[in-house]
Image 1 (cartoon, helix red, strand yellow):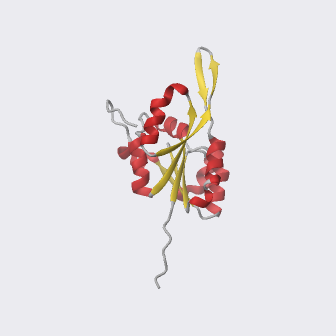
Image 2: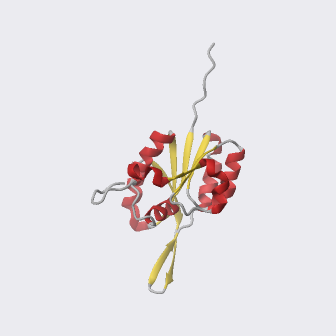
Image 3: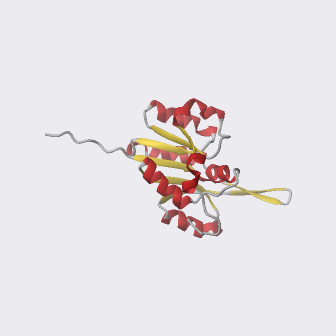
Length: 172
């Protein structure tokens, strides 16, 4: 009798603010729908968890992200003023780590999308468990704490042409 080959299940865990601000710091905008397709086609990601701050007036954005295939995990945001500027914070680090561990038994490998050194402990643990597939960083200025995982790091700039939002064309 032939031995059944177990299918590899890949989940992505995405720090949306780190990703969004990281690509914008390079002068371009990410097309989240194209990025979801890329994750599926290139890395065979079956579930993509997107961690994002909840701002009530962004319901159309959240709807388009869900339609693009993301599982959105929301965090309440806080507002504070810096001079006349209102800053909105929705730090999702704890949620990303928590959900990666909640889902741990459901995937065989994980992709972390963030350049934030706060995820060092998660990357280290996943690596020791042979479950770290990739760390996709949004720019070359990612945390030096992640450099020990260089073999897993992929800079999004390498596939920018596939996931960049084209000017004037609305997208998810």
